[in-house]
Length: 428
Image 1: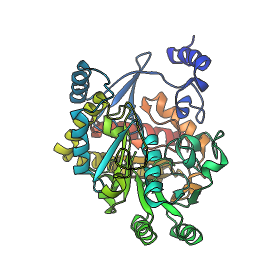
Image 2: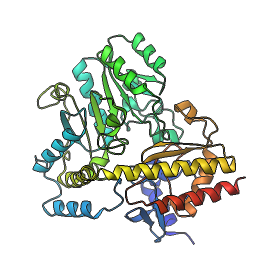
Image 3: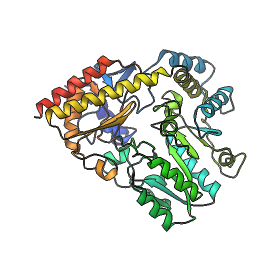
Image 4: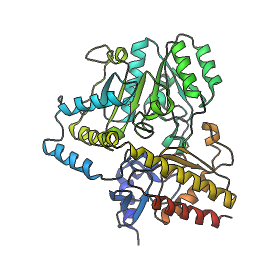
């Protein structure tokens, strides 16, 4: 007899491509049937049959306070009572703009959008409009959404599915996209030397969290800031993952590097469909209606999403000790995993910072895309299903992050480590 999730998946495959609305959910890289989630509370998600899982996906990052936080729920219900969408200006979006400009180092002005993809697309357009140049630099393995020009050696679901580039993207859309190697300044310098005066922007995930979790090496981000300034190129930080995860100032604060523009995703909406981009005033004043760079959106600044985001960011601002708790959870986890790997002689690498981590099934340190791709995805799939069967809900991909949230307690980390220990003991 089929489980409820199996039955739903069969129905879904008849009406949704692959049975899903986002590719990684289909479990293609790990096999089996995806769990259909019915509800979430605190640090747990519950599938359609009521089975409870300790959740390390957190809606891919934004549930930093835990699922269904009561204050955020109350803010959303309160906003919804006044209407779901107006398509007009509201006080709520002004308050959100003020808070973001207060917290994010590079923000003088900000524009709300509806997703991280839209934020990146718009930031790139603004950079091109401001500089009058066309070319951009991205890094192998960094994912910036399904924007045509940036689906070149992308990470995340593209990497998981083994798709090197997406069909349906005209070659002309990517002809001005130059690709560098993460943590390799020589590759960046070569691109600047070969394209002098032509590069509008360099975009990077300051912590590459879509090819696993790959940290920037000492001084790498500062060198990028320097070379961009020297060449009149705008530096864009894609903080869809790192924003408000590595602290109230995101990666900008954590690494002491201020970009010209930055993009954020659903964490600024408490997990609701929202994003934003912002930066220096003279750049953002290029955006319509002030300037000639056109970008618009009926749902941008949606009042319900703004209410959720304002409440989440306000809680983070008022309780900085949350970040200390998240850091402690992350460090306890990574230390415990290192002990387990050593104990069982497992050829894996644990990486991470703060509340982000990743276990790579490879015997070499991972500092870039090519090294991440040496991971044994079949071994990961075996590990994934063992953890899932034992109530641990991980992303169904070797190349996604493990997200901790503030609702988690040390006992949750201990439980996870015990299950991991039992898995690697079986593999000895």
